[in-house]
Length: 225
Image (cartoon, one colour):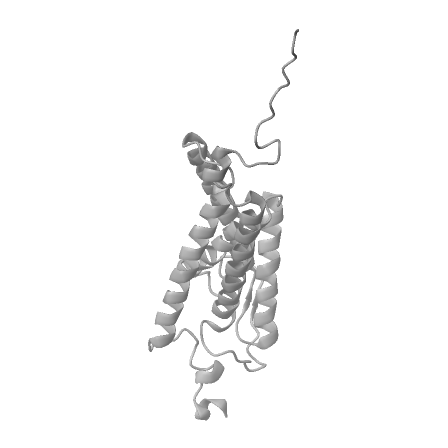
């Protein structure tokens, strides 16, 4: 008599864990890991924004409101115009560097954001800070800063795109799984934020001040009269 042999289903299909799966547990879900990385990246971005506001508005001094008469406006970029001097190259470079992380964070937190969108957001953030300086009478409204900050955001966005591409390519060559570019971004941002916090702490503890002596909380009582 001919007996028909039934196929035997694998242990994993029958609901029983196979020997391989029991000895090697499945790794953490990639989507959950990505959400954790994005949350950490958002926290780092918030820390960066707080430092950016403190640096741009109050130059790492105690927050204050200036006197109403100190509201200069410069609408011609880079060159000297009227009583306004030409833009200081060191200040231009510093403004560019300040907004590099802004564009990088946009690239990693909002991958669908385009280069012109990142530039527009950086320009809007800079315009908001310049307007706040004017409203609080703690600095000048300089269109040069808006242009340079927007360029800094665009440059940071481009650099982050290149770094993400290199990270994905390196992991692909090594046979790594996807998602490595975001993990690398979190590491880079964490290192950069810690370095910035240490630099800010060192500056605050030092006797150096960037606020002019006739403005802010450092003004002498005799100068206020």
